[in-house]
Image 1 (cartoon, one colour):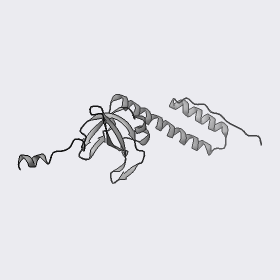
Image 2 (cartoon, helix red, strand yellow):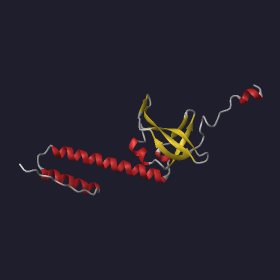
Image 3 (cartoon, one colour):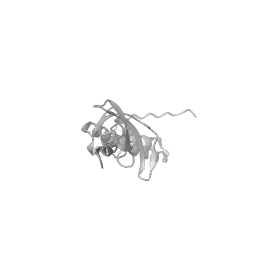
Image 4 (cartoon, one colour):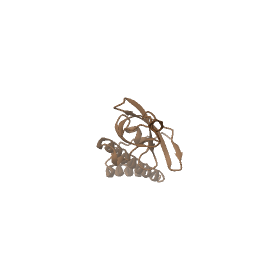
Length: 154
């Protein structure tokens, strides 16, 4: 192969972003599916070139759409692949991003547990039992709560 033929095989950096961190600027909320699972796309800002590049965000394992929305405008770690950029797992993210993700996970878990408690309590026909159950579970989970009951005239 001659030198001129080798030049024709060079990659154009605009087509293949090669940076490893940037600022997540936006996310497309349309969830797509493939044989590997659900994913979305976002836009990451390259601080050095001052350009936006698309980034693939895997929703199957480490991230949820809500958690991704919380890290918009945060510096994230991305992995250059042959198909473009991919958001790296939470263990490779900065401490600040990891803290945001952990807090979101705890809040989501607490909300799910509280919803299950309320649903099971509604099956019992006593308002007093519902209020006591919710207050008790909120105290166990360390959630501040206020409960209001509206009784209509018969």
